[in-house]
Image (cartoon, rainbow, N blue to C red; front, side):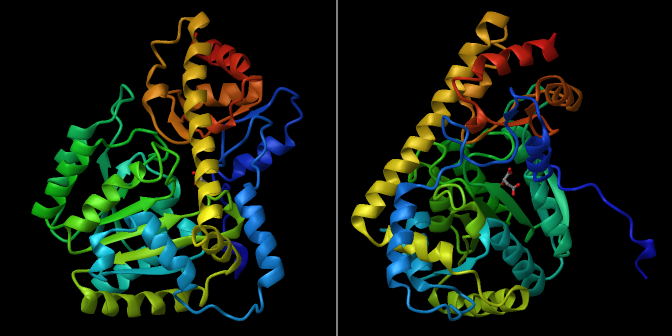
Length: 396
Ligand code: LMR
């Protein structure tokens, strides 16, 4: 029966991990998969996470199931982190949180929740978006539509975005990136979020906000601006949050599926459905990452230490953006790539073509996603000039 099954190419982003590891070039640079790296090129375990794990090692008393919604100590802390501890949405008790296996798991829960409870409907995603969005929504049976997001001259195409969403049928879902847009790094400002809110309200669309990089753009609260604006202003919003990046616990698969409903009664209804969706997918979420996050966020001194660590990661990436643009100056490319300083988060859409990306990999051992996306966190002072020189070569 298996003879008709074709071999497919591996995932374009995750495949870079093996390709990079197998490359023997001593100068190789990994600007591929979206993980934070320190000055040595390592993805460190945060000190706050190590301290929390130490406590868990001593105090954890059981490995029994944690239930389909996960650990309330984790989900309540994430709701405060995402919506703000003084959020009116929390006071109104109209937000539900379900612990999920990573942000990806939260997205799959969101897609299944929509498909099973709201029926077949369209979902509008930015062009470009994180490629896995497409696979997840299609696998759940939603119909994909694209709205422009980046113009051909590599800028945020906000006018194009609004014009396309203006035509979305009432009731369709709009996927928005809360901050640190993946792959482009172009984010909406406060005024643009306000315009999105007005459009979504007027056209009666359902926002699904992917919040995978809280803290990596302008700060933990600053990055939540759009999420909080929409959650406080609309009756219905879906949010998928991830602790992979801001806690550096990628492999622990720690995310959250958040449903904001009109009122408490309606929230309990949709929440009951979220538990069924989780049960039918994987039953209970993995516990360890959530326990670590709960340990940190529910302890004032660990939380303060963690906030400092997030700030250090955020500012290192911001500094690297400036340093890389400066490193391009001797090659006459400073103006051309000035947008790298304006982009936010780990990623920069460089505007390089697939052929240029291929040359960077083959000739210089520099790994980026074929779309031209570079993980800025993979740069370091040691390799800035090497990468700038390679960019100059492939741009000649
Ligand atoms: C990325 O975009 O590189 C990360 O979100 C990792 C992934 O799962 O693709």
